[in-house]
Amino acid sequence: LKQVEIPSAEAIKSARSKLGLSRAAFARALGYTGNTNTNSKQVNQLEHGERHLTADKALRLRALLAEQALSEMSVGETV
Image 1 (cartoon, rainbow, N blue to C red):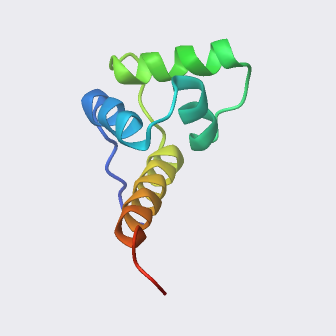
Image 2 (image 1 turned 90 degrees about the vertical axis):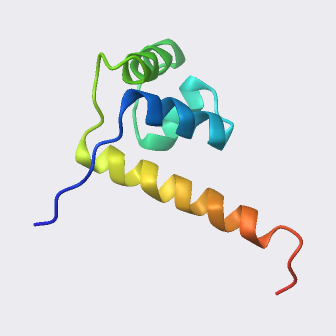
């Protein structure tokens, strides 16, 4: 089994900013369920180190950032 690196609170906040998502949208993108207030609170806790991402959510965050990087690379390119 491969270990998954869990990002720090600062890295999570930076990632959300880079993705341009609200706290609630970021939570949904990571797979959290619940209402907008609950999702926003969960992300706030992540960003302040009061909660930590699970391995599956850390992998999802990595995938979201990879998708963002690919979309930035393809801007202006013709396929």
